[in-house]
Image (cartoon, rainbow, N blue to C red; front, side, top):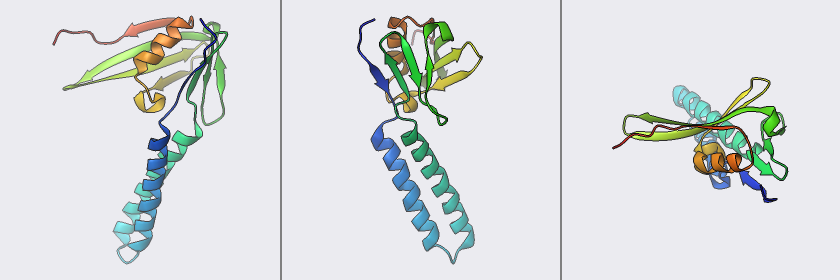
Length: 149
């Protein structure tokens, strides 16, 4: 692998937008104080949107593949570094639900921890990240659904 560093994370505008929506819903909740049920529903929605936005911003970058085939995974507890020897499997899982297809990147370390990443987490198609991890020497398995339409 070359010495290029690859980074993937949730899009910054998406995280900021969710944080802004949470703040706007919080203001709406405060403004609807005469109507207690509406205030409660808006407050719950505000907390949820703000929490998802804040988590998306705190875990940046989500994945980093650097020189020496090291994979750094950003979590809420701090970054975790994995090498190909520390990784049991990297799988690209493709599923089809009704008319829609989705892909997830599954990374399992030797300690048995399973990490699942989608397009939102990576800000990129998981297949692109999968290819970069394969080029870095990680053990990969492609489990996407391939059918003729």
